[in-house]
Length: 101
Figure (cartoon, rainbow, N blue to C red):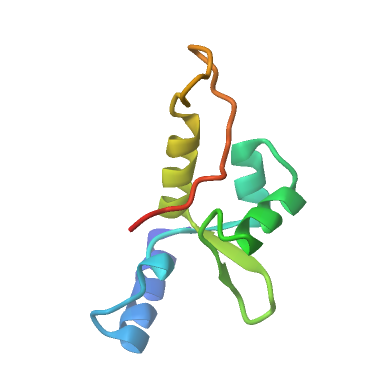
């Protein structure tokens, strides 16, 4: 997203929410296809994860999902960490992590 569009979006969010913009709305929002590409899974799988609350998402008025880039980055990083009992170097993605704030 160009800087001027990003600035305009931030201005609108501040107009609507003042200083308390929900963190899920701040920053870049990704589409389902973007998240699927990052995790190397189908778009349907991404939607199922979102429905189950396994990854952060918001809905557009048209019913489409958008995913905050920072939240997806966190899940991606956590899912790539070595799991107990996993072989060293195993980077299989397991996005079944719930974010604890």
